[in-house]
Length: 297
Image 1 (cartoon, rainbow, N blue to C red):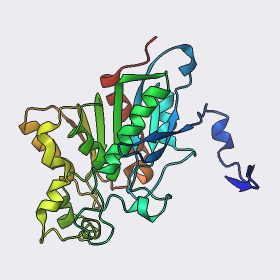
Image 2: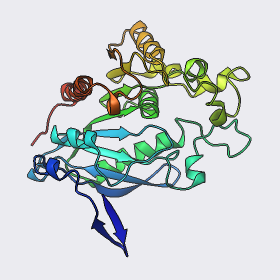
Image 3: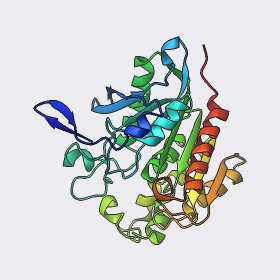
Image 4: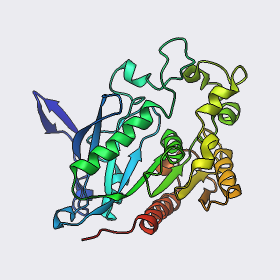
């Protein structure tokens, strides 16, 4: 842990010192991407350890949950695992994230909202994360622009599912504990009826407003190889959210892969059984190795 004193950082604790002695931790580089409407978005990139050898690397765009939370210049184990496995790592704070003021956080409220109407999920946030990926491809020579993957959990899973229904820019995707049908989510989540505060109307008054912003509505346009991960005891985004998308894709003749974790909740990646957390990490890395390959000279 560090504290900023007069513009400089001073170390207060060293709880991860032992880990640092056994692992080569990589530092992110901050950059700014300009979104479709000219908005500047804070982004970060982590290059694999051997990125200075003239090679190009498959790269993963990570999308955080929430959406009202944020990434930053700090340690996150999943990014270190991805970089150690030979992937470039990208992440950003699109509109809807916390830390940039109320207008930024409320920018993804639905157009139906009487106060502070926004684009709805899948609007300006979609533009922002795509801008991050494209700016990174222009800026960093170690990124193989033809081998991009995208992944995220919860809202990050939502936006991953939404992305592959609206662009084929990414070669592979992993949507985890996602909300894919907002209409059914508003009926059976453990926080059911709370989504109306973002939508502006209830699902009874306007089911169309929920379906319009639901990834499953656009399933016919999803051709990107997709890995779906979900926990069977996830009450925040119940497992039917995964099942609906998986079944719809299979009915269309697509070949998504679906992994279910028994006995786990929405918190699998953070507080799940150790063996399941290890399994999850290995499944994700294997998926992107299979679809994106490894570094090339």
